[in-house]
Length: 276
Image (cartoon, rainbow, N blue to C red; front, side):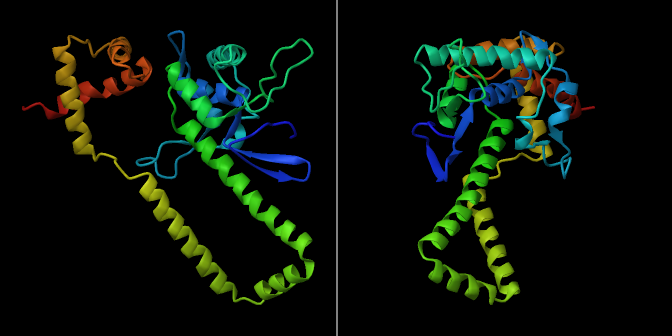
């Protein structure tokens, strides 16, 4: 894809550029709509999420994962489609106002931006979403991580082709030596490399999950604070919006829907800790 401008990192493959850390306006709006989960106070039905959710390998420990390559094929309908289109319009307005820089600009004959071919830096898209109070969660993180891994994998093949073209004889010797290696040794090296990568990921993303008792204690504390603030927990969505407004006044952006979903579990936690 030519004319993509200066990307965060890109690699030339003949006449194509493999972008890393780049996302189109259409994909960003779609993912942000999924993260939002509601639009104009209307909850997006679970049925609109189901085509995109993969079953968890461990239902107790892991949330549903996403398939990053399904975004382009996903046909949105109903509330999800309306949310996506509205977010896309906000992105366009920010771009046209010069508030959101772009890496690649593509317009149709009427001068309108083409959402699927107008590219943004991932970090700029993330910053924009935070300004507008749109939450960044697993959908967005999974997409970014997966696309980076694909591009870096392609880079390895590109470098191999370049080495072959630059020094065919030397490259042939290297390939011959590699072919004579013990396959078991190669497997061990790959496994060791994966173990090192796993340790690196663990350092970057420390496990801060709570066990069930700690979580219940935290929910009970939240329940006591909610009672003190005269929040009606039986109406968790309304209570969530109230808390979201409180947080917003402190400069913290969390959607009322997300808060409401957590508040639903508070009363059950309090009942479980009552002295009988």
